[in-house]
Length: 350
Image: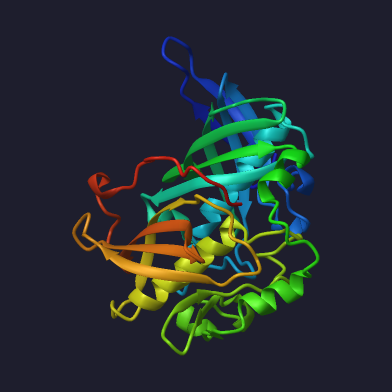
């Protein structure tokens, strides 16, 4: 078979067992409904293999270019592809291997990644073939109406380990989801909700937040100098399908853009996102403004800038995003400065 379509991986066995030879295919994306995407073009997962009781290999193909998650000026993949790929991998494994019905709603509580080898993420002449070595764990699991799960993944590109990432979610049936989301505020249209909630801030130019297209900017600022998360419910990537709240990936994109805006000019050679930890204690509704509050963090390693961004709606923090940025051209920080999974967010957001 064409080497561009299949990758053989030598998988170390559990203690006392032999290694396993496994081949992941990258021929075509999996069914879009199995990763909760409406557009086939937004599906990155191509294959999965179970190699242990709670261990899986998942294959993904990252495009050489993408409308939103495109390579930077130096050719490195957008780091947020890590989060989206892990999200898709978890949903796919949940449906295909772990018995979670297709009708269940998935609600995220926390996610994280750290890049250990930026050079492995540079795009070449072909799309990148990505392998996730996934460890699956059940958390607060109460089937059949509620399933709690967590994945931790070691990420490799063409066999070269380059990152670690993880995600925790729970999946609930439609009835339980509706009770979780009930606010007694039916009747307001999606477009009207967005207009009412986000009319007071001016959207920043795309170049100021590290994006190419004006509609990809989700960062706004009020006359009083307050940062706001702005959403476009017609955005084909960020709102791939209709929803009743602001997705996790939209909030993360807003935090990334604010980090870029605050730090990129600080480093003459630009800044590179190295690590992220995001905790989501509550849903972010569409009909209220979301404020983004930034705070510098104490240095965790030489050359690393830490930044914490809270997304606040009303009086409630709906997400906290802690990021590590490197000046472009510096090697990745040592393991002592890397994020590890801490306390899991207690609430909900997807």
